[in-house]
Image (cartoon, rainbow, N blue to C red; front, side, top):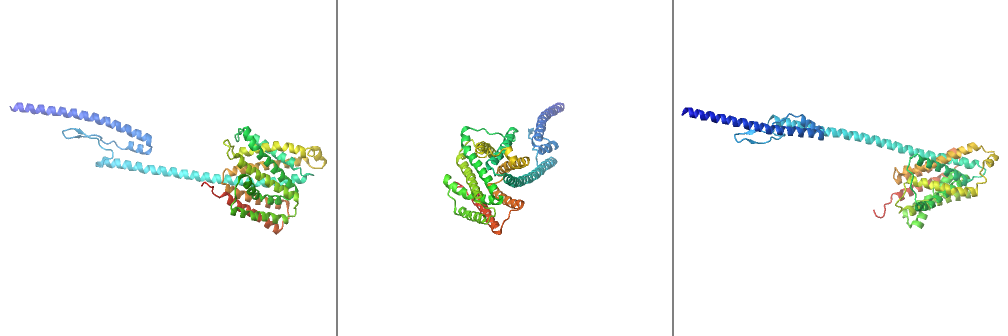
Length: 428
């Protein structure tokens, strides 16, 4: 009987041992599968999430399963378990991963900030260079243009205007041919709307050249400072816009300053005065008509192409007028008979044409980069710079009263620009 009990105990121990080995084998197989899954997940996390995944994959592998008691109930262990050395290692790995990400993000943010700062400085420098070039081209245009008009036995404003517009048209076609700016696609309806604007642009240039041929450059630009007066009148007539009292008040120093400067101008004559006034009328008519005719144009062009098309059409319109009014007089034989240096005259006329087109193109480019208020202020400063530079270059005599009138007119222009550009729209 003792032998039977021993045999039964041996059998029972053998069976228990066999069951235990079998259970352990199954547990090991399940643990192996979970371990492979954990390694794959860690690898995937490393490839997907950068530093976090890399640190998690580098952390020591923790036992995912264990056998509890005789019931052999299997339970996966959390990677962030709070118990034992494994939990400490997991928390350390997670903390290191969390700490590494803000550092990377901070470095990226600093790099982006430095890049944005460098880009902002570069853009500011570029804008400043454009404004300086805008002023210089305007100054040299007035100087060269005045020299050409003063050298001719007759001012010949129609011929000079056609020459300047022709030079600009050549530059425009070169711009389109070299793909520096895409050429527009024009319809007959668009050409019909732009033609009146081109006519106003051409006549405005003709009258400006007439005035420059008769009076001093500084006086022409003082008269042209009265443009806001014509803008208010034409906007009320064609667009039905009613100016506010502050805007009307800003016109008082403009009109008073121009009148004061005219009474004390040494080079004053009525032909030069009325030519400058006619230039204001035609130029502002062009601006007002552009608002009326192109406001609802769904296929509107950008400003560069609109100015380019206006320039080309202005040249085409100026040719018949030039041939009818001055074509017989402006010939090489006639110019040589007057004793003029024809080569020098043509060079200066070409430089004037280049500066004329260049400063107008830069004006549109600057307007696309800054607000209308900033552009208006820069334009007002430009007129001051042109007047002062022409007075110094041509040694134009100017009295204190004349300077006071010019300053009052320019101050009124500045005030008008601020008031009209900062007003809120009605639907705001």
